[in-house]
Length: 261
Ligand code: KIV
Image 1 (tube, protein in one colour):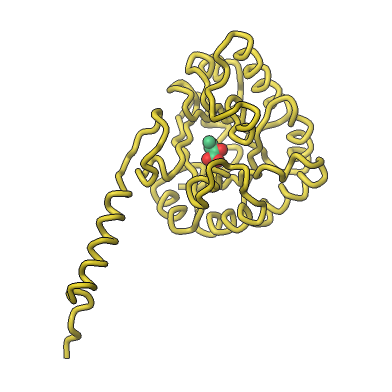
Image 2: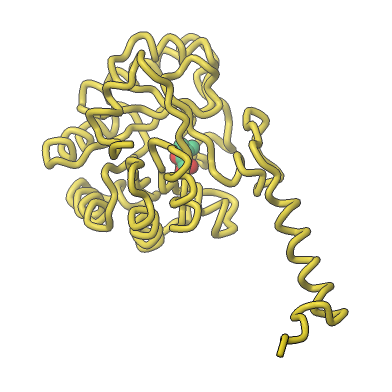
């Protein structure tokens, strides 16, 4: 398999649907890469899946950079995308550029940021600087305080038109793909048909060109995953079983076994 790049992601539209997921460390990134996952997102969802926060907002730039470097070291074929954390691109375009450059220097092939028309200036500037950008519209988790919770977006015709306009705007600004999170599937279908770039849905129905799943959800490590998630494994059970077997075997003297002479 050849390394995924911007051109092959763009060329996949209408040809092949891409099953993509998040990764936050070298161990799981290597396994996902070996299994053929085309795009690995070092998502700011790590704030919730790995760092134990209730939202993505506390994630720091240094945490994103260290996770991005780990994933990039392990991924041979996948396109590695670093998710710019909250605060890294809201405090001025120069700082945003510096942070995007740091992600690329850490090994990312592209960056992702949240927002529609309001981040188009940044998308254009990053693209012109040679930094490929994945956009993210619909429910953008970094706006959780604005929404008052992680709430499905685009439910009225007016709200749907706003999401559609945002998606068209990020495409015009140069985004290579756009995440559509938690919007009605009819709206995701409408956007997918209207755009020439790949739409990557999460909680946005089956018609998108690609899908994201958060790795801990798809592997069954997160037992309170959203209802749209399909768990392809139930690792939480396996991991708990393994830990308790180990604790029990040490307690009863079964492990470690007596050394053979
Ligand atoms: O951080 C993340 O996991 C994401 C996905 C929702 C795409 O942005």
